[in-house]
Every structure is written in structure tokens, then in C-alpha cells.
Image (cartoon, rainbow, N blue to C red; front, side, top):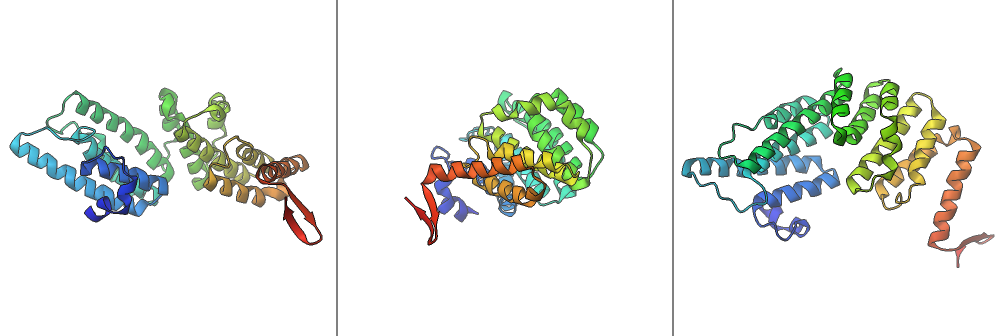
Length: 287
């Protein structure tokens, strides 16, 4: 693990992070963007080991100073959170649940100052939200409880809607009433500006399109695909762009003439933006 932290991946780490605890967290964030769940499990185990060793050493020496970006309890809790997330993404919901419980209550951690207590509270909240996510994706009947939780926690609505649509597609749930309940929020999603929120929004559109398709509402499914494909920054989101193109082609036979024309016009505009292309008997030529 030390070789990883000091090797080629070190180029991705923020230059002001010197402590291995912070390097681990930064490397975990990198692996999250890459969806490399197996690596995350390895790195989170290492993060847990070194944070636990430091905690035990501090407990013996009563030395609490540490040259890190955050309190020690954060790294201890984040090691569990990262592992639980990776296990959930791998479909290992029972194992993920065990690790969510581990960071749900860290108040036993000694030497907590005000910042440390804030971290404990944050992990307690994350555990509650993530337990709902894990249980819903695993097929447990917690949808109505989760909806109530989202109504009381606005900041969780967007990722929560993504989870609900994903679970609906996994377990053939009817969530029309949930979509109706949050319709005003959904209508405002396209105006969100942060990259994290945009990523959640595009995932929501993707799962919503599949949901409509599964329920034979094909025109609605195509409409959601076109919402993404006509968004201002869809080209910048290469992975999602390809997924939506594949989804449109799978649904093309159900698209209206107007939707197909909109799709074709979109690509004409994209080609025009890149270069002028013409076709003659000898093939495609650019000018």
C-alpha cells in the first residue's frame, strides 16, 4: 500500500497533503470517480489500520496532536464509510450494512474536541441516509420511511431520488407517487450548477428513462433521454453521453417522428460545431 501512495497515483494527490491519512482519503476520492470498488476496499482497510494504530498509540501516550487536515475520528469513520459504499456498489448489501453500523456511532472515540464531535454527528447522519439507501437497494420495504426522511432533509433529495429510481428498476417498484410528490424539485434539477449535483441529475434521468421503458411508457423514456442530450454540457460528460446514446438507439423504434427529428438535428449541430462535413459519391469529406 505504501508503494501505491508514493508511486504514480501520488501525482493525483493534493500537494498540501503530507500525512498518509490525508493521502489515503484523496486516493479514495480518486478511486470513487473511477468506480474502482475493489481498490477502494483495499485502501479503506489500510486507512482503518493506520487510523486505528494512531488512536491506540495516542490512547497510551495521551498525545493528541496530529498534523492532518481533519480530526482523527474522521479518518476512522471514513474508512468504514468508504468500504461500506464499495461493498454496496458490488451488491454485497449485508456486508455493507455491517460497516454502516460501525460508523453510525463513534461517540465512544476518546479525545474528541468540538471538531471531532461535529464529525461524529456527521457520520451519524450519513449512516442514517446510507442505511436507507442500502436497505432500499437490497429490496427491503423502507420506501415510505425513506421518502419521509428525504422530505425532512432537502440536501438528500437529489441523491435520494437517484437511489429510489435505481431500486425501482432493480425490484420492479411503482414509484409514480414519489415522482409526483417531488415533481417541483425534479422540475428545478436542470438548473443545478455544482458538478456533484449535475452527476446526480444525469444519473436520475438515466434511471428514470429505464423506469419509463420498463413500464412501457416509451415516449416518456425517450423524452428523458433527449432532456440529457439537449443539455448544455452533455458532451463534457462523456461516459453518460455514450450511455444515453445507446439508450436512445434501443428506444428509437418507440420514438415519435418529432423526437427522431430532434435527435437528428442535435447531431447536425454537433457536426457543424466540429467541422463542415459533406457527402458525395466518393464518401464523407471535411472542409
